[in-house]
Image 1 (cartoon, rainbow over the protein chains, first blue to last red):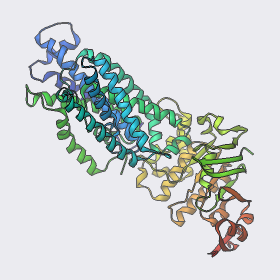
Image 2 (image 1 turned 90 degrees about the horizontal axis):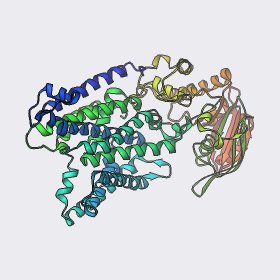
Image 3 (image 1 turned 30 degrees about the vertical axis):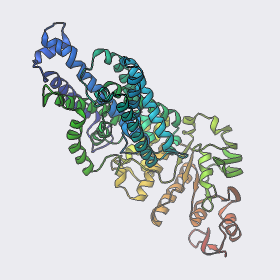
Image 4 (image 1 turned 90 degrees about the vertical axis):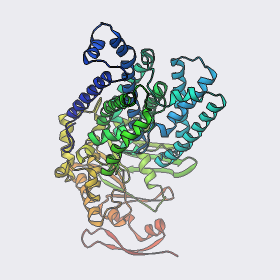
Length: 334
Length: 260
């Protein structure tokens, strides 16, 4: 798509973003609580050699980096889809009850099945995300379809309610600490085993999102225009919603509730790549992945060996950029 | 006779908006639907273009009920421009118009040579060629409406529906849009069906007028037959003085009073 003069050709944007992603990956491999060399990073990925450093990279740091990238891309894309679907620039997966539902489900799972493994927790997080979203949508949809204001209001209410219940359960069953370990948005202890379960699912959904991007662009114009252009809007909306729920649910299962990321990353992508979702979605995937990776790197290095919470870093790093973009006018909405 | 409705009932939930409506849209002509607010004219337009479902009756296009037709195939025969649609800002005119090719595309929607030719033709027909790289938000109201019409044109359909295409435009831009539609009808044989509020515009541009009230048709026919003081009294409860437009020789409503 090189139909605009203002925006760089899309493949150049993607190339730059991809180089940036590669850069963050290498940086994230190099730096951390323990020192490793660039050679170790190379060996850990491309050879079968072993040493303390290489094992540390293979077993701890690399899965964590991949986890960060997957979560960044997922939440970004989930946010982009939600914004397009509701034609509302202020929506992120958190606001639509997704993450609150997943957190509540997580709490219930920890209470009912204290020994649940990752897979079971993930399934319940999905179901939670799905129920939270259905609750918000059923409250937020009027007879004429999505009403952006209703949706946001319903989202705020349901999120508050579900969060309150989650916290209540946490206090009553004395699992608050356990729960906050999951929901504080840390990537500590991401294992290959977790990634094996969640990774493929996320990747499939990201690919699906890329393929659905054209439909999302048409749908983001207006529902009536989309129908008039021959889109099966009900089916497309269901598919998009399903992709969003899986992506957000998987992210919560992997690292917990990371607010703001899903709101912010699509706006970055929109700012760079323009308002067409065929460009926004791929750009969001790469920017989301690199951003999350970078934030996680900071989280584990600025106060090493202690972890700095990712959520607060996202707010600190993201807000200035975000405010700058808002000042220049949110692309895709004015 | 490609497009007609038979005994059409349209309802939002339980509230019946249009009742037992049968009408035939004349082929290759400009048809205008007029009537007071809430008479069901927009609803009829939406039902005929499958934007909303109908309860009873049928809408037939080329011998087939529209809900049984593949919606993408339908989009190649019939375009609908809804009432003042929003657009994401930052979108260029060219991008917006290119979305009209949606029904013809698959996969990522890369534009073929043919797509590009039709988009250029649509931009040319609407006088937007020079503005094609401009963001839609930087356009004036009239240019913006023309961009949306260009999108409908890029759909390359024989039939084009428009819901109040002149709303929010100043009187010069209104005429500009209507003359564009007239030219499309005259030079390209497109069938145009639109809802208009301005009776004089309807009288001036329509070959066939459908006058509605309370979800039913009061009168159909030419401008001379429909823009008539008796018909206007019945539809709008107004006492109108109708004469002849010295420029176009069509009926013209000079002034009117409400019937008390």
